[in-house]
Amino acid sequence: MTQPGWYPDPQDPRRQRWWDGRQWAPPAQWAPQQPPPRKRSGAGKVLLAIGGAVVVLIVIGVLVGPDDEKNSASTTSATETISPEAVRGEAERRAAEATSAAQASSAARAAVDAERARNTDPANYAPISDQDFAILAKDPAAHTGERIVVYGRVSQFDANTGADTMRISAGGQPADWYDYDVNAIVIGDDPGVLAEVVEGNLVTLHVRVNGETSYPTSMGGELAAPEFQAYIAEVTGTTP
Image (cartoon, rainbow, N blue to C red; front, side, top):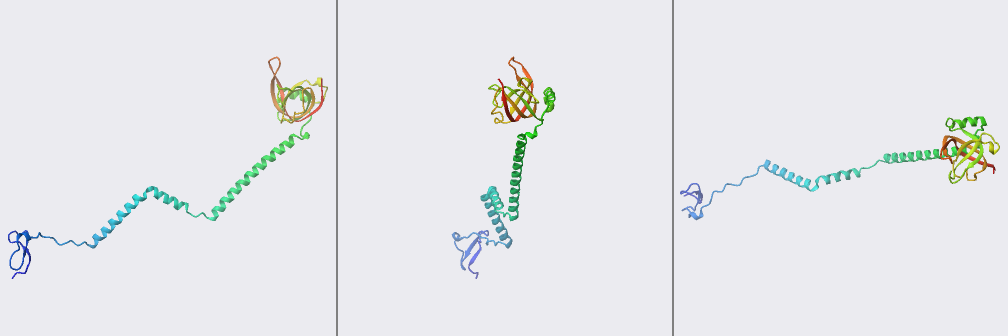
């Protein structure tokens, strides 16, 4: 006798039908053919694991983004250790720069002080004869930079000339005031040089030749004249 079980339906072999050992079950108990479940191979499991890992990496990349990667790189760079040698080298470089700047400043001050001392020392100015002074007056530009002693009478020193500029009648040697016949413009090196000088004074001046300049006349024209820079001014008398 055939054992109970599922067998091809004698009415429709495409289906199975239950046989209870004596008779076929009613059609209502027919069961569709169910294929056995498929087993995953070892390779399939590996591929599935790899696929999952890729998905995880993609999600992490989206969440982190390029900006976070840059920040991470910046953080790594910022936390790099600076060696003691680099710190010491930077400190030495800055110290050298400070020393160099201080030396340059000191040298500049020393040069200014030396020039001031030179300008205020009468020994650095040469006497000049009336003949040589007359030659200088003809071409002052040719004598620019020369240091000489000049004598003269202050012929104009007022609001029109200013507090540090005056016009004098000058010569190379001391003389009576009416014998000074060369017009010259004198500029004080600083306001203090001519502070005690007034119009009509007789003066002895230690000057440097600046070259030639011009000044306006009462007639409306201009006259050329030597220009001197005065560093020492001594009032020796006065005139009517």
